[in-house]
Structure formats: C-alpha cells, structure tokens
Image (cartoon, protein in one colour):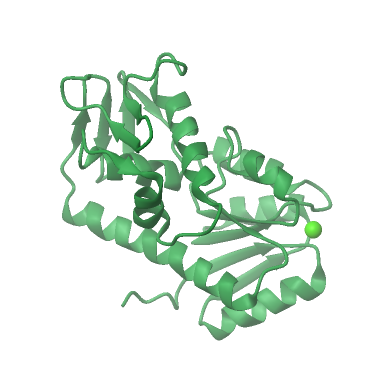
Length: 240
Ligand code: CA
C-alpha cells in the first residue's frame, strides 16, 4: 500500500461550501490541503510551491480553470490536474489539445467518488515513479521517438516534447509493448486505473493530443496507429 498521507493537494474552487467540504474530507484521508478561491491566486499558489495534485474548478473569478491549466502546462508544471466541472460541454475542451488536464470529475459528485478519484491519481503517479525507477531503460519507438523513463524525457525526431503526465503514461504503456493492440477500455484500466461509463472519449482525446505532439502529419499517423474496430497500437521498431 502506498502512503498517501504526505501528499499535498491544492484546491482551486470559488464555491466556499464545496471547497470546505472537499478540504475536510481530503484532510480526513490524511492529505495536506491548501485552498484558493480565485483562478489567478490559484495559479500563483501552484507556481510558488509544489503540489502532488491540483483540483481545479472550471468557472472561477480572476482567471478561468482552462486558462490556469493552460498556463501551468506551458510553464512545464506537470502536476496532475483534476478538473472539476458542471459544464459537460466543456469536457472535450478540458481534455483537449491545448489544456493538458489529466482527468475530470463532473459536478455534482459524491465526496466518496472524489476521494477515490484523488487516491487513484496519486497511486498511479507513485506506481509510475516506482516502475520508472525499477525499469529505467530507455525505449526507442521506430526511428523517431525516444523515451527515457529515468528522466521522463521524450524526444521526437531529436527534439524534446512536453507531455502531460497522462500523455506520458499512455505513451509509455503503449511503448512497452509496441505492436500490441489495446482497446480503449484496456487503456482506461491501465492508464487511468478505473473504468467510467462514457469515459472512453478521454482515451480518444489523449490519443489525439499525443498524435499532435508525435506525428509529422496528424491526419496520417505513422507512430500511434488506429486499429479499426479494435483500438490503438504503437508502431513497432521498423516504424511501420
Ligand atoms: Ca466555480
């Protein structure tokens, strides 16, 4: 069992009652919590010190959650971000190309679901760190992608690319078995650690984001391949 008790969580939420509820329950689970009620203050807090997870509301005074997320990622802050949103129409955008959130939870949610989700994300990060430390050998995918699990650095055609933690986990999982086909639900289980009805589009969003970062021609992928009717695979060492 991993020890989650030292983990620091930043909650950026302007609904005072909800922020307090989340804070209390996560503190009961042993987490250390900081709360901010404005987007701009939350961004400053996330820049000023390091957290293990950020719970980020979408609609915030000062700066909205999408902008907070985008700015953190553009500064290469790779802390996992769990978006909290009542607007399901925004979910595609949240998980979409530019924003770099790792996961979302839709309002209204049960506090038990929130706690479970937070723990799942933190466990996955710990497991990933442990497996990278245990198996730090670099992986070459085809001729163009080089992954160094020890430093979490990914080179594409010799250039370093910034991946969010989820994009990195997805790529690493596929890269450890190049040529093997994974269904969306297998990837959900392996990379997100849980299944969730209607959630498979999260896999599609992350695949699209990875392609935008890896492929020379997004419309004709040569690295991250679709296997029609089944799922996805990474091209094998011959690059085909
Ligand atoms: Ca709000």
